[in-house]
Length: 184
Image 1 (cartoon, helix red, strand yellow):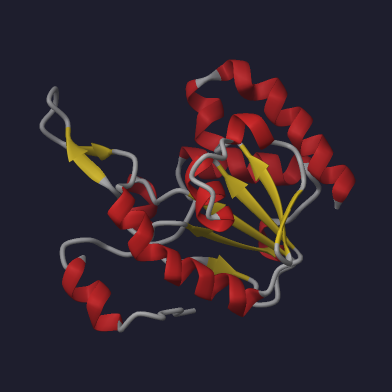
Image 2 (cartoon, one colour):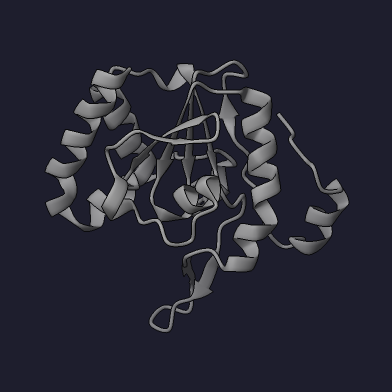
């Protein structure tokens, strides 16, 4: 499903050396899940959330009683932001730049207006800030709580990768999944 507000050639020219990873899922999905940006596995397969974080997301969806087949999944930024590792000399993930985020927000908003979900689930700070247009909001202060921004209902969660790197968040994440399950 191609959602391009800006001229398609703009993205092709600007991100010539990057593989763009677009969202996937049901066109009439009631739940719209937004991550930060694709990682290496996502870039290789051209699909969102297929790596380690994707496996966590699949587990969490199951706990929340939601099938991946019934949702729409995308990322705020549609390319893998990388930097060169000083240790290995290989490309590694980095947070997306402000310019990259700003560049892809129109595309994300186009996806949202096309899908028209009942609930938007943000995974981490980048998508939370993108859909609320609030640079000061943090996932730590609003995770697991239903927010309403205009007509949009937003349920912020920590990013599934956060649980990989910080096991102490696992119980918080489980509590948040219970909260979203109750909401649904």
